[in-house]
Structure formats: structure tokens, C-alpha cells
Amino acid sequence: MGQEPELQRFPACNTADMKDCDVIRIEPPGLRPVAVYCLDGEFYATDDTCTHGNASLADGEVDEDGVVECPFHAGTFDVRTGEALSFPCVLPLKTYPVVVEDGTVYVDLEHGRLQEG
Ligand code: FES
Image 1 (tube, rainbow, N blue to C red):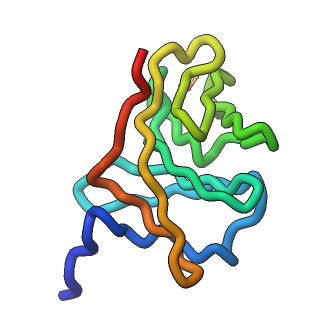
Image 2 (image 1 turned 180 degrees about the vertical axis):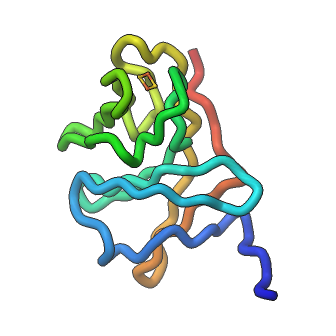
């Protein structure tokens, strides 16, 4: 069996696999799914499950302002901060630090955080 990936450097994808406004879902074993976004050459990660219901945000749409729209009821979040931007979403998403190294996008699953206030 392979080794468990480190939670501080969970490999999500290659930079070349994603273009602007793409979003993918990763499913780390035993943890909540995480959405990874490409925005203007930068990468961001949030919890994948909408805080309003059981929708996968990776099935939603991301615009060039970094707003992801939930596929269920069209609530929106800022992918950079996790802030809930429009009803019916009111609770923020947890965000995760992302590091890019040698063309690989790593998500730090250990240091997810919720936006203050
Ligand atoms: Fe996402 Fe309702 S489940 S807006």
C-alpha cells in the first residue's frame, strides 16, 4: 500500500491541468472534499461542500472575479476568502493554504481556516 500523503502538502493537481476559472474537487481519504480553483494564474482551495446544502461547489461556476456559484440554489462565495457573498449562503467556507512547487499544486489540509467575522 502507498504511504498516506502528508496533510500539509496534499498534492491536488498539476498547474498545467487547470486554466483560468477552473475548479476541481479533491477527495483526501477520511477528510472532507476540497475544491481547488485556478484564478488568474493563482490557486486557491476551500471546502467543496456548500455551507447551505449538500452541493459540490466544484460542480458550480467560477467567474473571473473569483466568485463561485453553487449549482443548487445559486448562492455565491469568494474563493479567496471563503466569504459567503449572496443568499441563501450565509456561513463562510473554510479556506486552505495552497503552495505551488515544480508544477504541482499542494493543498495544506492541516491549516484550513474560517474567515473571522
Ligand atoms: Fe448551495 Fe443551497 S446548497 S446554495
